[in-house]
Every structure is written in structure tokens, then in C-alpha cells.
Image 1 (cartoon, helix red, strand yellow):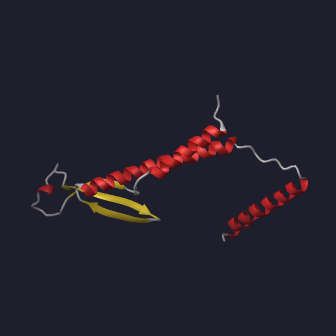
Image 2 (tube, one colour):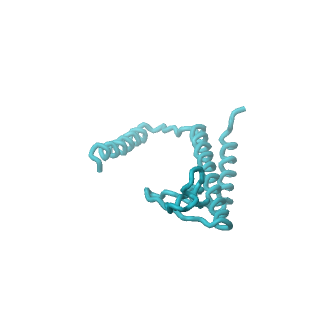
Image 3 (cartoon, one colour):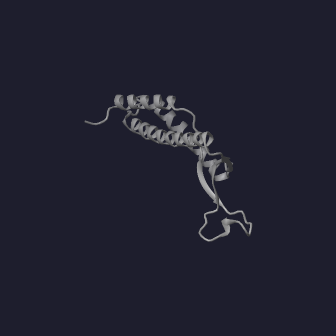
Length: 141
């Protein structure tokens, strides 16, 4: 038995409900870094020593601009870890929602237009719309 439109719409409604129930989230990743200080007599200069650390750093890029913040071990790091994990769950839910909407769009029937005059007007309207978009693409404006 195939999927019906009603089944898919019910599933979409449950996904929207999950989306409403999502808590706080933020973009980005958390990295663990070990660094060398550069002092000649420091232990970090010895071969095989990983360096000073670990240091925890949250990084993200928003509209082409990079942001970073050093995180303290403990509640702050835990908070950022949970929020970035929640963001990954949000992205998965969004992908699932888009795929479900595409299946709904495929099942939804196309409206039939009986009136030839109305159909002709619709064709003209659509041609004007796409001609304007194509003209903007050619002229770069």
C-alpha cells in the first residue's frame, strides 16, 4: 500500500510538533586544541609532547564571518555541547521535513483549468514572470 496524502500530512504535522518542542540550539562545532607556547625550556618543546591543553574552542561562521570562543571546562562546555548537538538534530529534522513536503507536492493533484481564456491568461502571466527573471540574469541586475 502506497502513501496517501492524508498519511503524509499527518506525518508532517508531527514533524512540526517536534520542531516546536525543540529547545535552545546554536550553530558551530567544538574543537579540542593543544598548543605549544614557544618557550625554549618548556616541556611542550620536547618531541612527543602534545602541548599545553586541552583547550576547548567553539567555532562558527555566520554570513561569511568567523566567530570563536574559548570555553571553560565544566558547565559552559556542557551547555555549548548540548546546544550544538541540538542544532544538528534541528538540521536533520529540517531535511526530513523538506523531503516529506516534496513527496506531498508530488501526490497533490494539478488543478485543471477548463476555461481556455483563463488558461491563456495564466500562460501569458507565467511567460512574463520567467522572462523578467531571465532578463535580470542576462543584465546582472
